[in-house]
Image 1 (tube, rainbow, N blue to C red):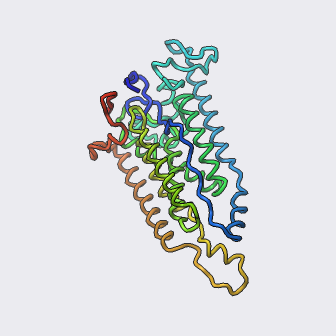
Image 2 (cartoon, rainbow, N blue to C red):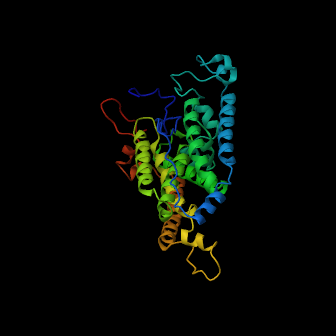
Length: 339
């Protein structure tokens, strides 16, 4: 990444970027914390482990199928230039100088629903805030994101079920796209499920915090989560990687985790198996309720303000002169393109 990619295709979100990639580093996703011991919790563990992660598997299959459809629509042989892996015919990849991720052209991604700020604002195509999540810039982009989704998504869905994790994935992905759109110029496109994946990471962190009293190895897991998230975001400051989608998804997922992943306290769970006359305990602790309310309010306010700014065509860079450093930090080895 010591050279700037050609203007036709960039591997990030700004200035015709085609990759909104999640952390391309060989770091395993952090494990879920271990529940406190006890007969009641043993019963709860048996109960929550009944969930089969069919939704995560469905998301992976849907993303792969969508990538194949995108490559079919792209039809590289009809375009000028030498296609990569030409024996695949219509599914062959654009030249590496155009798309180093082994994928389609920018025009094809726009046709398939990539996020384009001017089309959302002036073309009234708000649906692009959702459709861009299912698109990927190439095989490399798709592979990294799907491996992350399989590991993190299955862990969470087995415990919390498909309704909560599915909602979390989609809303966090929307939040990542929203923040990304506010910081890109009208010439840029954004694609990828990285924002949704970072949302799952943020939810794992908030779930640990709001259900703090239920776990026995919480400090170790908390440090693991923080280090993993910081490391992942650090990769986003490299050029041509959209870190705004990562940050937006992370913040959305973090707040959503307090709302949808809240668990009853151990004492309340235990009393369900206690004899009659056992002293009752509240289902949730006070701090859990406070975090729930604050997070829900921040989510509603944040999404409302963000949507209003986007639909008015506001460029967030005009209100935050240093925010572009969150997505790219220029050094002697590379420079950052603010466009």
